[in-house]
Image (cartoon, rainbow, N blue to C red; front, side, top):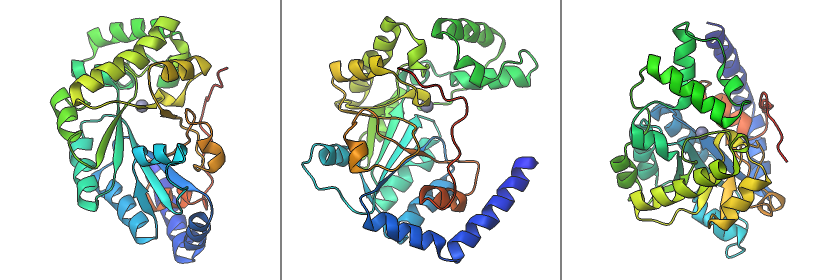
Length: 304
Ligand SMILES: [Zn+2]
């Protein structure tokens, strides 16, 4: 109820900012400066995703793929004006109906960062078990707690939870990953094997998450996998050195900033704006063009 009320107020304010020209002025500033927009979706509805793409297209932005972004980083292409990079994290089943047809319809390149274990095993994402367990009154620890503990402890509690909670498949299937990777507008990247908090893993654990997800996705798609998105945006220097060692050429964080020339200098720390999919698209537009304050991430831990 509170979130419905909050969304109504937020939407009214966002519409006010759009109609009074604040958003248009912010767009012009962005498009004339050395800024690229880098957006991260998860499991948006088709209407939400299409509204965002449609709005950005009609307001002077153009879309580039992560491969093109890589060429810009390599200085094989000039830094563009008004460019947007679209990324989608996790590999949700709903992406098949809500993202892929829109990418094809608008000829918009997107890159889906897939966690492989949930695709392979056909269960829910790990945090869904925690949420379901709390709803069923079986535990009271929130998802955020599980991001702060050792990965081995998280897995142990999760396995116990899975014996009491059954969830249906939430991710794409292997066949679907293969199928969508054939679209000229869909790229596939790695989002680790099991979506852990990487700095909470052992050295071997972190290596496995980064290397094995790459190999598995290459098998499934028949394509080279070169891009990575850190689960929950968490990483340390160790993860960056594994990414370099195993042939990844860039990685996305969840730092909510624009892609600038300065940011491109750190190709394993590329920022992205997180789309808030339970708010309206108008509010998100205000947020990404900079006329609405971006909420700082809660409980964000900085790793060495
Ligand atoms: Zn994720």
